[in-house]
Length: 152
Image 1 (tube, rainbow, N blue to C red):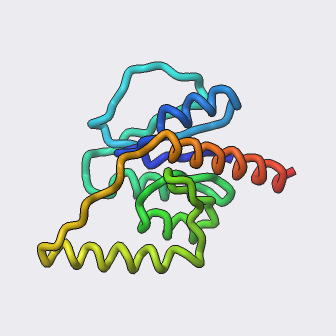
Image 2: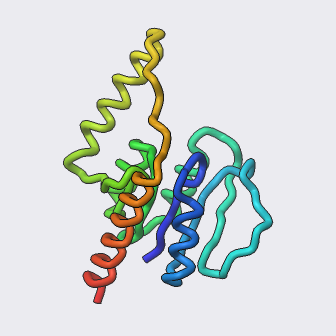
């Protein structure tokens, strides 16, 4: 089992890296070359850099993930495709994407895009809080524990 992070714009990279170092779990962060870093990490933490193009990170993630892996993303489209590969998909706000929920989320995304196209703009996302991070880290801990138990 590996934990993949859709790294562009993700507010949880540092927290997950710190947690993974303590747990000695494999983490792969897929991100644009624009976010290149020379910082060194243990060999079980890796970065995969992709071109700056739209959805470049998404396509690379889909090539790398396997059934039983965990993906952290806020991209509903990527989440839907990963669910089809039987990957566990988490949102950084602390909820798990499911087959039952994804259709509604994709419909919401479509309607929001349609409204933006017509000149209607929402307020944007709320700031990411410490409480959001705590909720997410608790979920990640539980999912990893359950996944480890299920594979034994």
